[in-house]
Amino acid sequence: MKVKSENGKYDLRFKFFGNGYLKLSVSWDLAFMGGYNSSSVFPEMIEFVGILRDREKEKEERAEEQVRIAKTRPASPHESWFEMNHPMGSWAQSHWGF
Image (cartoon, rainbow, N blue to C red; front, top):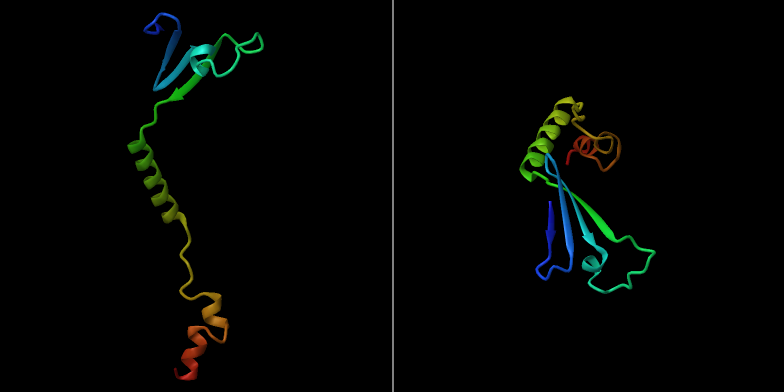
């Protein structure tokens, strides 16, 4: 789809690829609004690409992945190395009568 700016000076081209993919082509002058000198080194049109993101779907997928990981993760030990071996650990302190 080709679109002209209000004053007719700039061309914009939109190309939709389906499934939320878009390519936008704009002229160099429109993209930088005269901020750079458009010499022959730069292309006449600049292309931008975008993907439509479904944040709710991504959130659900992350939650499902976390559940799957939690199910496959081995159980953690009940007491850590520190608790079992260090003199300040709870196991050692319980034998001291504290």
